Amino acid sequence: MPLILLVEDNEMNRDMLSRRLSRKGFEVVMAFDGIECMQVLSTQNPDLVLMDINLPGKDGYELTREIRANPDTANLPVIALTAHAMSGDREKSIAAGCDDYDTKPVDFKRLLGKIQDLMEN
Image (cartoon, rainbow, N blue to C red; front, side):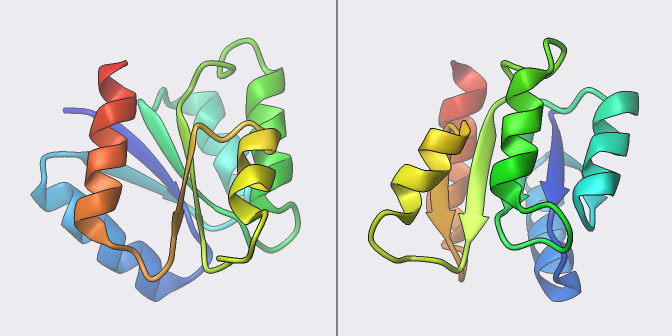
């Protein structure tokens, strides 16, 4: 069963996404912030990270750069999830090292397609 790390500080978003992903056959581990994210990555090997951008402490851009800088996680697929849908936000996410970008509120079918595409490559 593929393992997804969901990094999201909003409890309702975490709950909704984790339940929907579980119903689609994914195992989901969650992190509230950057500290938890890095702790999970040190103990588990997720197949993909769904990274909220606006997090307390370190933002998702900084966390993604840390993931890319670590040889153990450098190739881990990361999808940025953000309520920011301004011009340039997608490019900023890609420049930080994210493999893809999606906006909130989440279109689950579209996000699922992106997850499956990244896990197949």
